[in-house]
Length: 288
Ligand code: PHE
Ligand code: FE
Image (cartoon, rainbow, N blue to C red; front, side):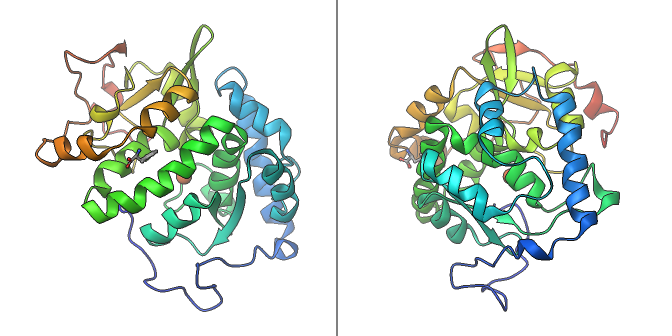
């Protein structure tokens, strides 16, 4: 997204015009497959009971267990379910390239996997974050529709100068979203689902605020990319997310044009408060 430095301006050597590269699944080493399996096993220790049902069902429906998945095999299953496929890209791609892939139900994934000494934190999304974190949710029809609509909406937001607002929506839903489910809160955001520590922190730590999802409010709220979030927004259902974002954002963008941003730790009188956080973690300086 627009918050990251792009490494390239045009497709690098070896990449196609749409920036895709081959996965070259046969070239992954034993160590790389083991890194995937270690991360997978760790997430399975924490996600049951914390991840939403749609994610757990997606995990079951896809071949993600047993080393780095061969995307050709994964895509057969995924495409049959919702029409999505996963394509490999050489790291972060320009916004318009990213949006175009999403608009056509192609999810861009990093091809590389993190090094064994980077299990807990890395700057750039790797294939574990992109595929384990994002792809199970794409088996859900409502979420699948939301992501396609987001790609189309991105093209429009870019032309209106509203990308920072749309990036906040992505951040607080696709990456760090929580959902009300059954008795409590569950995770559907991929940035959390691929992190063992944040999967626990986001639900159990007293520090962050947990607030009801409010589309316009979210699009005004600042976020941080370098540490655990200070606020999580809670949707009622994936259907709600799809329904609210299907509306025409034209009038919303008009209102947002002159609006001030909202601080990351703010709790407003209009917020539906699930947890008013202590913010103790951030006050200590954070960083895990
Ligand atoms: N409905 C938005 C618009 O009119 C597009 C959009 C859909 C944006 C889903 C984000 C997510 O621009
Ligand atoms: Fe991501």
